[in-house]
Length: 117
Ligand code: DGP
Image (cartoon, rainbow, N blue to C red):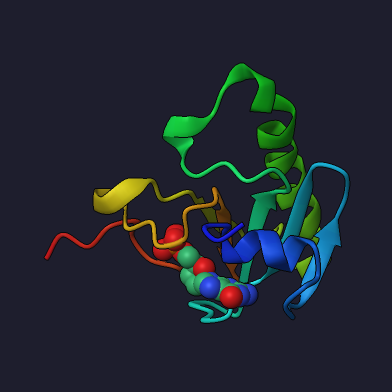
């Protein structure tokens, strides 16, 4: 598949990534350009391009992304100090990879969600 996402190749372990969790619905791996001490991407195993492309059939995987986020936050030792979950969508959302992914960021105080500058 020529237009398959890079994340699908990571899920199938065809290209390297530090996978921290995988089950039948989702995969989580460390971001290649971390923006915080903990920066992990949680993705559905099924390739869904953006939040706009989700359907009710995807709810199990999308819900699993949250419970896995909580599990990984505990695993990484950031559950108590807190962390941020971000899902970018489309051009104005700053989405670069067209395969839905949840960023889990933590390990330092992240500051305000958006700059007012
Ligand atoms: P976004 O801007 O929300 O689409 O974030 C895409 C993120 O994906 C970005 O933080 C960098 C990360 N990323 C892109 N390509 C790769 C890759 O090949 N491996 C890993 N581990 N992360 C990647």
